[in-house]
Length: 129
Image (cartoon, rainbow, N blue to C red; front, side, top):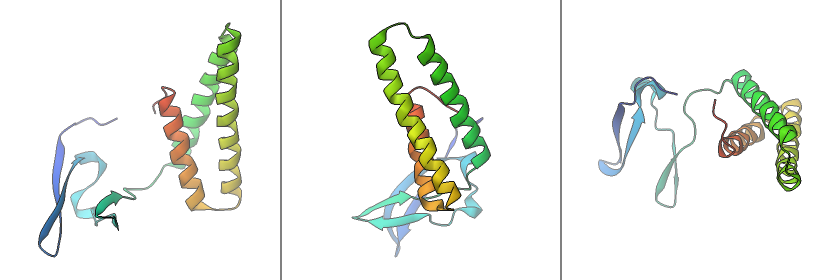
């Protein structure tokens, strides 16, 4: 995913008090554009956004992954494995339908949540972009 795996070190402080450290891959962000993308929650910090999503690439990744999973499903000979894979495929298809509904209604927040969950579930199944 990244050409260089050198991690840039950041320290996070509030009111001159160190509250944490992060190591981030240099191509992921440019330090001059790094504007504290954190929210405070129970004494911890969470990155909520870095950069912009490329929805066309995400869509293509999901479509290609689902096509491949469907082909794997169809080539499976074991009935029990086929039933398990079919359940997973139906779940992925429901997510795709849900994603399409969020797109039609221009609900960006839910669309991003669905993209995140979809990408994670495909990653768990062994698909990477």
